[in-house]
Image (cartoon, rainbow, N blue to C red; front, side, top):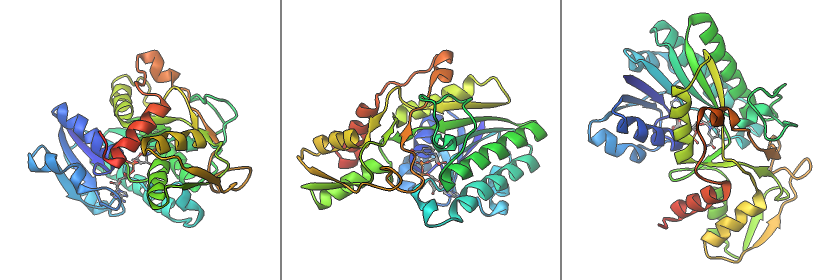
Length: 314
Ligand SMILES: NC(=O)c1ccc[n+]([C@@H]2O[C@H](COP(=O)([O-])OP(=O)(O)OC[C@H]3O[C@@H](n4cnc5c(N)ncnc54)[C@H](O)[C@@H]3O)[C@@H](O)[C@H]2O)c1
């Protein structure tokens, strides 16, 4: 089995690559290193277990030359910064939608029929049903990032319908763990190192979301792929519980051995961290659950383990 992993040098991608290498798959990592790091996959490059191609999904010729002979694509490359869409309205259109279109075109031309895609809970927008199941609708994203992932999902399912491809679309909650290079835990630790006595928290601290540990995330991807039934399957991926931002800060502060005060910015639009921030996200993971998958870690445990790894603690 020869597999192309776009974004394979990134946080989630490099963990997926670890697992695929352990399964003995023949892997090509395709990454422009815009946020990914070679050090995450260096040991596999050195041992000759993967081939690394530094290339960009905005360049169709580079995709064509890397993808030839592959049986499957795991498509993780994207700009994952939700906040960015509020100041740069072009980035998610290019890096997520056009990049995905370029990849699908290359797959079509080269006869590659299978794709696993990392989507997001933000496609649901402000869902009124909690936990939110995969068949919730209408999906009304409120961030440009969520809109771009929704568009990617639609493109992928349309290519599957039109060109006999198969896909699994994974709608992730917040995925956290070692090698994460962005996100709220990362930001809090950076701020607390600069000022241990006070932590500024964007919003009112009541934004409540589910956090899923990277090991559970990668497990769910491989499990979901093996158990897919429909031509385009959609699976939510998250933990079984949620936690608010204040609760998250409490875990991080405890892991750092601090007693910091919190300063809430109050936020925008009724306590959100930023425009486009969904205030409450809790995904139903029953679809994967019915097939036999369940997460091993709670949100709080995932946060503690992630904080420890960022802090370099055992
Ligand atoms: N981390 C989360 O909580 C989360 C939640 C929902 C969905 N996702 C999705 O999961 C995927 C992986 O996210 P992550 O957190 O590992 O982010 P990441 O930034 O660590 O990984 C993205 C990778 O894609 C590469 N990349 C970006 N644009 C590229 C391009 N044009 N061509 C080639 N490579 C490119 C980057 O260098 C990086 O290695 C993304 O699609 C993201 O939208 C992540």
